[in-house]
Length: 109
Image (cartoon, rainbow, N blue to C red; front, side, top):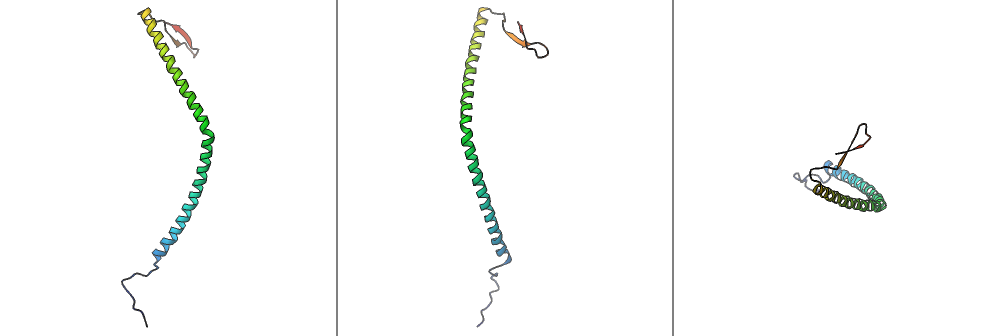
């Protein structure tokens, strides 16, 4: 007995079907390989961060401390200038850095 052929149904294993699954398998393998590389790199970067993070935290605390000290000194200088201006209005006793050839000579006003 012979089976009737169905003309409206495409063949089960067309060229496109086989090439799609072949390409998909190759892409999955490549993605797995790259994932392994990325996980390995992630481990190295986490180790590096664990070694450098304490140094960063220390430097950050020092910077914040210096910033606070700087702000305090600025307030002191501002208070000093205001006090001097009140004691001797119209006169300036402050100096500027000047001079030629980078010598940084002090000139008083």
